[in-house]
Length: 106
Image (cartoon, helix red, strand yellow):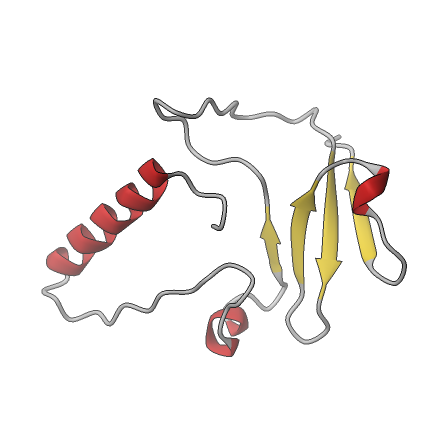
């Protein structure tokens, strides 16, 4: 995603290379940029895409897993291809006309 660390981007590139090699170099790779996904990519997610904050733990980033009592605010956009992006749980995140979901984690 757009907030990935250099470690996460490097690991993704490594795993894609390994997968490509394991499949004999036959796969065709396509790069998608968060927030500017192609129609084809979005069509794979008929129920929409949810972008959550987080990631994987590394030397640069601490991540808590299995957090169920977490509160988050999701900003929902789109009609044909719906996406929900986690935003700061703050009044500043709200605006008129958009849809927001408050997840209380219970």
